[in-house]
Length: 378
Image 1 (cartoon, rainbow, N blue to C red):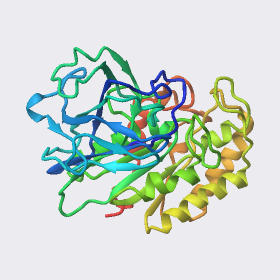
Image 2 (cartoon, rainbow, N blue to C red; image 1 turned 90 degrees about the horizontal axis):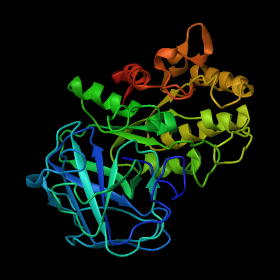
Image 3 (cartoon, one colour; image 1 turned 180 degrees about the vertical axis):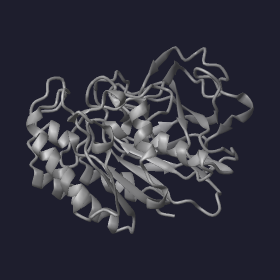
Image 4 (cartoon, rainbow, N blue to C red; image 1 turned 30 degrees about the horizontal axis):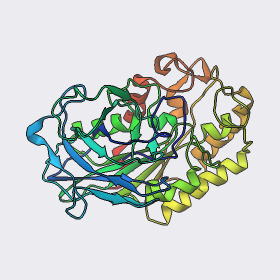
């Protein structure tokens, strides 16, 4: 899955504000688990008018935007290959007979004949999306797809079905660090991807859902950085099918954006230690209402990043609460894991992407390796 948010101009160039008209989008995603049939969930969550999908297909990937033609399947809704998604709604396409293995990648191609208006998006996809003028939903090559971006549009998730016994899914709920900022684009090295790989290679594949939004905060709504965690938790965690465990790893932006940060795109909103803990406790309570296992993750060090060191007492206090409160079923101490042993308020250079805020690929692998399979809902 991916966590949708409002169309906006962000640090990542994207097409969400203008939307699409007589254009085809080709988007690449990787599944964490396998199954005999596949369906796609599409969302018009932030649309103000109906979204008309003139046609959609799914296929296994070729290279650089191409597809394997013999795997091409037409997506439909109630057997109609052209369908409408109402404002604020999400739909699941009819399942198609496309069997997928864990960690296999697919290409979803959408054609919009009519103007869509601003597009519900996920800005920091860290995966290349391709655009063509006209209808190219069944093209085996990517010759017509002359424009690219690294955002996703209208995608909510991919469901690989007919797995028995069903394996409970895990939602990684967080911000840009869960989103994978700092990892290599198009290589699926985000923390949830690394966790999916680790489980699959151990013969224990299961759905791993990425509900990270870059810049997201637990307590503060934003037009560019997503709805507050306490508001979006129901849609991005509780409403997801088959979930058994949630990993809550958020709060660094509540602390960092309590003060003005040049280029952040959002004004400062002060958040106290008590307010942040109350927000995290709200997430725990929401998860408990659906009998989910809840894993809490400590907030990473960020000394040297644009975030002011004045927030360090809050980070320390919140991390102490995460470790010692007993309110989580398990704790992932990412703070200790990725901190510089000689300067604990700073990321270890081995794991630092270079901005002193986000891990690199090695950091994300270390985070995934710290997850104990026994702590996940079996």
